[in-house]
Amino acid sequence: MNAPVAIDHLLPGLDHQHLDALEEEAIFILREVAATFERPALLFSGGKDSCVVLRLAEKAFKNHVSGQEFSGRLPFPLLHVDTGHNFPEVIEFRDRRVAEMGERLLVGSVEDSIRRGTVRLAHPLESRNGHQTVALLEAIEEHRFDCLIGGARRDEEKARAKERIFSHRDSFGQWQPKEQRPELWTLFNTRIKPGEHFRAFPISNWTELDVWLYLARERVPLPGLYYSHAREVVRRKGLLVPVTEVTPPLAGEQIETLPVRFRTVGDMTCTCPVESDAASASDIVAETLTVTISERGATRMDDRTSDASMERRKKEGYF
Image 1: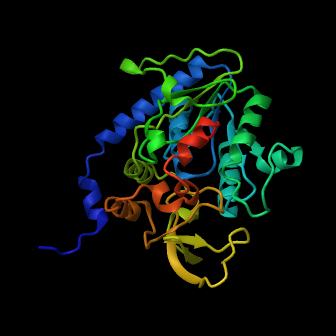
Image 2: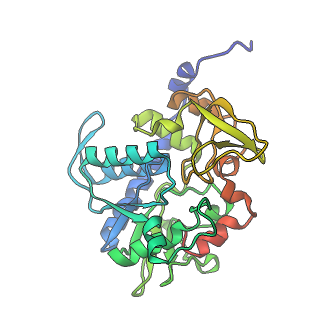
């Protein structure tokens, strides 16, 4: 009665009609952005959510050739805010994917902000994740972007659950939770004054499970960090902290080599893996069906500083 069943036998029986509805909604939002704004850009870090949004943008604006091939160009550039402490595998994947697609990538660098003096670190190994806000706002000002398309989802974190699909930002790049605009009947108020901009989140209504079901169905390429691999880690405050040059083990910590994967990727100083043997998107779908903690809650050190840490950062202009 309780005999194990391979996930490959279960997946054909899953109803994917909801994915078609989510895909349709996301493509509608992407086309609304292209039609409404003069200088939009798509935030692309090489992470799974931005890879999904990039595939949706291909479907929205390019000609489908065959299989996973599309021809044409997107009507906006890609933008990545690089902390300088991103996982090398992700940066390599980002550059390779952009080259394959023939798209234009703009990079806002925290390192450049440090050299300009607009970002000051307390110490060299301080997490740069929060400082991305400065580099992001500087990139927006330099390129005069009026809308940034992101891959944030409401199920990631409670502050993001409060945000609209079209999120208005004032002339300082700040988000005001109490001044959000209503979005009734998929009608969006996108009026802005000079200096203001919007953030648009086409997959806001998706869950982590939806993302992995879509990745499995569409065979979207991802960095290898998302799948099980052996990695040196230390246990710290209930998390598995990867051992890297910017996250060395502390005195008394024991280094272990475990099979792990990353549920989300970001700055190495605050992103942790989870123990897992999932080696494919189908395996991760099965694993995701059993989790009870959101991906950020289970893997991000920066979100554990306080219950309001994400909302505070978003008010300052974070993604």
